[in-house]
Length: 498
Image (cartoon, rainbow, N blue to C red; front, side):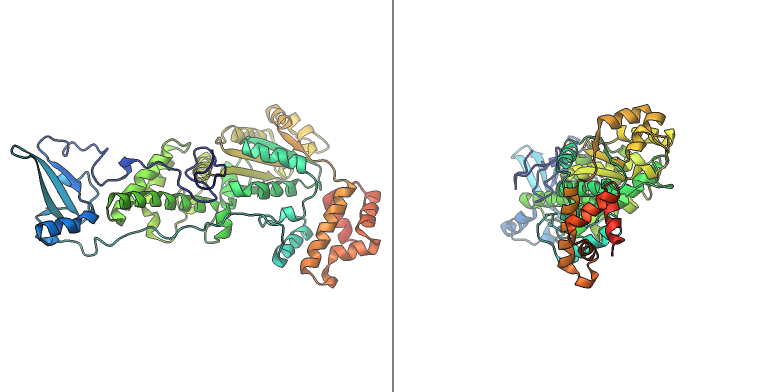
């Protein structure tokens, strides 16, 4: 569906467009406790109890001028009066009471709310608004590269790891466009499982991070490495790693967020509070914290009611919503569920997927180099169960070698140990072939351009290496004469040539 404001595509059931924060939510009257609508209160529904409602602040001055009185001249009613239990009132509000009358059909009177102790609270009418907007910055790729960006890419290339900064992988990406288009389409289709297959050194890790760069403007992304302590048989550890590594465009632009989940939650609540504040203003009611807390709670519960998250997590989110604007920022990822255990792991995945969807994002989870993790039937079974439990807007991408799938010298392949995962992988894999000589030449030229951008001549390692062969073409030809072409092997070849 298109965004009402900018026309860009928005994920189904998103609360707003992730690019422009344009409102897409429908305001519900029951969110606002200003007139008792939609509330079931036996006392106020009694025939002998007249209608009580909060009188709009913008009309108070005219009311007092009409009767030539001040607020304190009005009759009083305590905040704890049972007739007000269905309203979110504060000391200083004016209540309009409408009674049936034998002579005039309807009789109207007004009372000033005072605290239960009998005193009007000081400062009770101070206007309250939510804190400032979250950053409107979103990820944008530009062809130009700064010296700092060039240095970052080169540092990661020298360490043989994918660059971590957004758009950095695009600076040195070569070929793979067909495979990348397939991967992007699978993310947009929310395909739950994709296996990126390639031999060691073919650029699987790089491809996964390159995919992150391509879809980052419309997705929340988390890419993690598995290990002895972090495996799918320890589901809590895997999901904890996903949580801690979750990135969104605004979380990258705002380092005060612990991770992307905190940004998604914060932006969601700020948007909800804006909806509530706009309603109060439109109805002529003063925007005060006590009212906003209750309305934000109800709106949050309404938005989360039809999502995949469990009732327990939803209730804790609703409670957290009431406290959110008491401080500059609260970390929902660290404090809401305290820590991720095996029992709560799927709840956390649903939470990340739900917050991503409400904010207009898809969710991409990536596992890099599965061959380094344990190769047991139990681990493979846990991967299948995880894929089967993924929410609808979530995709899992895993990188691994052909030997891991088909079998080889190390054994314990999918085909041998878990037939279901094997068939799932064969039907949902993207195969990366060995780089060609043209690929390696293009890769070399991009490295040399980055070195010229940020390094003095003496420190240009790859430039100096290719100079020893006369040109980048000669360097590539020498390399492929000595060993099968891989990106990693080619980097080691250049590094050993200086």
